[in-house]
Image (cartoon, rainbow, N blue to C red):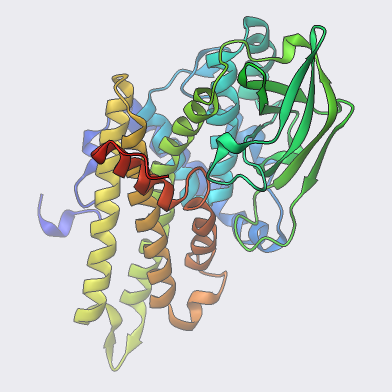
Length: 389
């Protein structure tokens, strides 16, 4: 393959490493994003509105709970799920976040730790987009230290009484069910809290300048009585929520590649079209170095996530490996978005171009589900054997 034939968005031809099924998934979701997502995301971002009508179409494509076998789920491999995240986030981080929460943070724990009754009730409905879920772990004071949670549940006969609150919860006010993690006398347990239960309230967080096309809110629990049937019976430790985060972080490593590609693609085209001092900006050494650096970082991220997906599909994935990729890929994507915004000059601050929107979104993505520092320390602990948190 000659240099002229290389795809600027795929210099190492990662596509050739994908199976036919994986390519079909990527291309199908890519067309959906091009046709249905990108045309409306600018307005959704500006209006601070989640395009909820897309949920049905996302479900029809089989993009919810894709890694689960049965229960009306697609049963796709991990690389396919990653490619779904990549293409969705090429449209906007908000839609990828919705799918990540629904699939990795809600459906995954119900499937992994729930009773058969819970699985039958929730998983098919969530796969079809008929029920929406959210994940209640983060608390206002806790942030990067989830083990410091104040939300607690106490037994009352066969029931549980839940008190506390959760903050920065994606899908909070539109969720039919929340998988909520609480401290108990027997360790951390997960509960399914249903919309409309007495004492359960949600509140949307307004005035965000990031993930504006996503629903973000707070959850409040005031003596919420939960039947024993709403307890996830399969886990009683922090391993439960942390295993969910590992699943979601894996998808994020792929998703941010899509955001980076969208920004790079627009910066490249702009540099080729923009004429300054009687020549295209792309003809200058400074611009070529900047574009080459973007391409290098996208390529590195692609190879990291592909290798991570193959390891995951072998059942050999370690959380440290996910942390390394989340740290590297989020940092790369955010830096690319910022540089693309700068390359566009004054036009870069306009929502008519995608870098400013992706840049603002990525400020959240690099923070949630483990800040950059947290993931650096996870890797550091693996290397040294010492916990420096």
